Length: 214
Image (cartoon, rainbow, N blue to C red; front, side, top):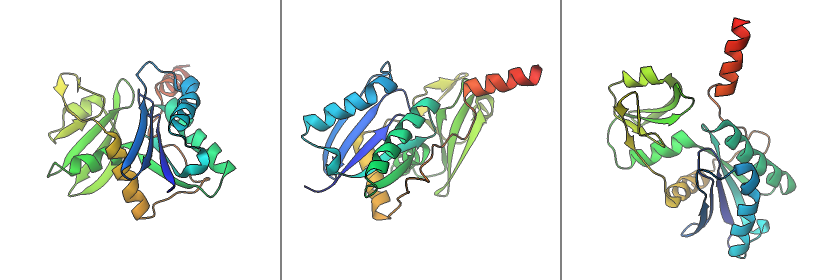
């Protein structure tokens, strides 16, 4: 058996697990109410057993490192670090969610654009593509509403009356992305695998405001 790729995405509202061997894909997608801390390991175990696969059959661990849910991203990264620490021969691929989305958009949209993901109630993670070059930042909802560029969104329909063009991700989108990473040998090591936060969490922002006012 060829070594499989295990893709873990805990960055958003839905838990996503994908096993791939190029054209062969087995996956699990949980609903928005699933508690990742309680279900990540059990669902992964069920997915492996259902397909008669063990961790020894996995050649590379691929994990979304953000930006996204602070707790979710930490959970996925921690699991991959634990697995990789046990078997250091496994390859590790980190997935920037904004880059993944931008790669998908760029296949069908010609021109400059933005893609946004919710950060807090008042801010968004933003990926910007200008002449094919990517950059990442955090903008407030007000700043985004004042922009004239074409804006795509992931998991957000609108903000303050500004409607976005929503995009979705298929299992194949994840697989294509990591296959390109493997082709270019874009691997990371166990100790450099870290979450991408880009901004303070809502709780951290509220704590900072409280400390400032005290």
